[in-house]
Amino acid sequence: MRVRRSLSPRKQKASPFSSALLQLCDRTGALGAALVDSEGEAVDFSTSLTPFEMKVAAAELRLVLQFTCEADVPGFQSTRELVVRAKRYSYGCFALTEGYALVLVMLRRSFNVSRRAVAEAIWTISSEAGLDRPDGTERWVGVQVKATKRRKPQSVWLSGRWRPVDILGRFSATPNQPRDIGYRVQLNTGAELTLVRERLGRWYADQLPKQ
Image (cartoon, rainbow, N blue to C red):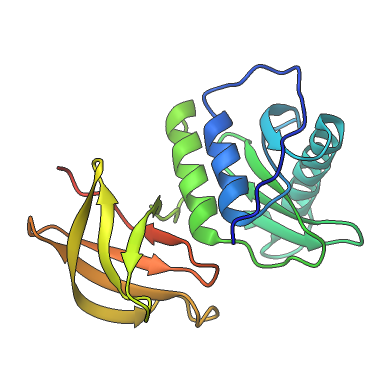
């Protein structure tokens, strides 16, 4: 079941990143998401918390990421993400290029967050901002899929209509998330793509074929 959260009122005007942040909250169940710069200043955010809570959390997590990267500990300098479980909330901080970062405020006791949803947000935000994408960032796009009772894909919504697919193969999409199931499928145009169903029922594609 999809939980709809009401957003807190805010004075800050929407930016080109607003929809990506809102979509990220929707797809991960996060209480808030923010794009911050190298100084922890919120460029934009989407949250059901108060704007003040979201901005403070985003600034603090950005500083924690910075301190971690500056720590005199082997391997810490290359840290690209942090996930923290705290008493009241859990948090995620994901580095972009040029000092920017994506911060998530999640429900208490959360530790796993959809890497595909985060990757999609990073890809979209980086493209909008004209930033290079961080090395190793995968391309994933959230899609609507019609599936059988056994959760096998039958068709995918592309360009305003349902496109039938033929399954070419099935595989375990994520080693540490056995409920994430991947399928290699083919459209009737001959184009192939990978569809992944995550454990919460959301589907992602590794690309959107040109129509």
